[in-house]
Image (tube, rainbow over all chains, first blue to last red; front, side):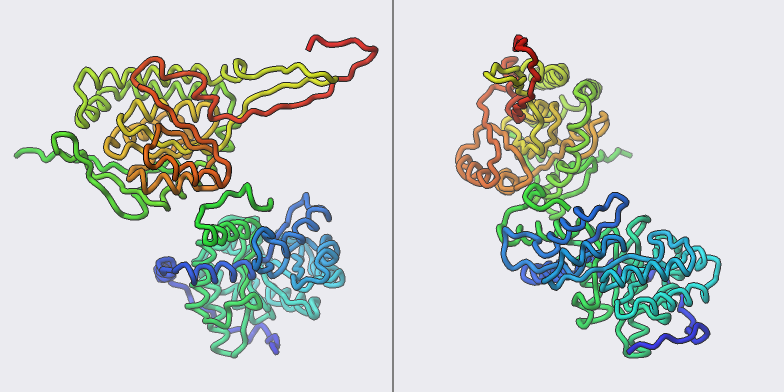
Length: 303
Length: 292
């Protein structure tokens, strides 16, 4: 079991060679994936999706509809797996939980004044506890990017540690919002802080800021997970979120996970996609493989 | 020193850009004298898929533009084509036309585009109807654009055939994926350059070159294509029709002399439209009746 360490024991983060990262990432995208592997990969992608709705206009009805979709992705074709989880705001956790009774789909809730994180520690802890009490299995918190960029790393570290405590049994995903961190060096630093402060998962983005889950950023975070695993033997999960809307990109991500971290991470316990429109694209690709005909979104459920 | 002439590379047109085929293949059609016309992309099924994706993406905003604005943009195509008349004439001559025939074909293509530009904001008034019904309803039928149209350009002409099928399909708000004439493909790609410089949003028209019997079946079977229009396809006809059945695509084949003034009409527009009939209740107080 993972024990948070104190901030002053945090190792120095290595600096990141951006050109090198870009070259390695480009190579992941050249792997040839044959139909049979592709089919398995697509099923795997579906089972790794956190189906997400994080909008001001969310209602219990909308959440209920999305939850139905989570375990009825495409009833026209049998054998399609369920997604891993749904991801909603704290106020919607109860509705989601009720709608998913009797399924293996988990409920993840964003918290800590998502998406900006601009609030007091007290409110963030209350926010988290509320979501957990409502039944959330997983908590997606955001870090204080402003404090991070000011160099207040200890503040960020302590905040993550205190939210981890508030989570209880719920797994904690820490959103770095890499689009606001400016450099890959910062991404690596924030990854290390999050991992050592108690994150079970690290996640790229809220989905509200562009750029989001680029492969360069995800690769940098995977390397942080790898270095931590090599040092401690403890696995940390990874969740790229935002901007992954095509099957091709999702498969490239799986190739990258396999080649950087290995097969142990190729399941929804340790790897997730945060996405809303990815599921339909994957379903359309699966149906293309099954029928031999390119598909139309007209014949799939609305996201 | 003599100057070495630069040969043009003819690339395909997808989503407003000119990529090479993803397959990396090319072919070299010859004219009747046996001279090569150029190296052209031998497009693949994946290019068809990419083109349909681009066309679908462009459909929303193109179909939502005002009819008047679409008319302006179609007219702009004619303006740009007029400015490049010489280039098209040279290409047609390279592909075997006489100079007089080439000029006639280009001029007719320009005039035909202007003709359809004029129809953009008028066809709905002409085609739509208010229908008599025996209840207290307004009942009216109007036409709406379909979506993505697959256009198999006539094989015997390089320019006028494709203009005659493509322009009426897009002037009502549809978007199109066009497969150029296999042996006379030059004007199709140069026409793409005209489209690219004439305010037509990227993706509204996508143009591929290559083998018709390789590309057409995939296009006809694609679930996201709403109609297939072409000349009669001979031995391919039945296969294309069967592929189109899966999502009940509209399929129209035309026999026409495209160089004739007769080969343009509002019905080329209406074939690529869907009819929508609406029942709108009328509150009928005190028995006063409307004349509808």
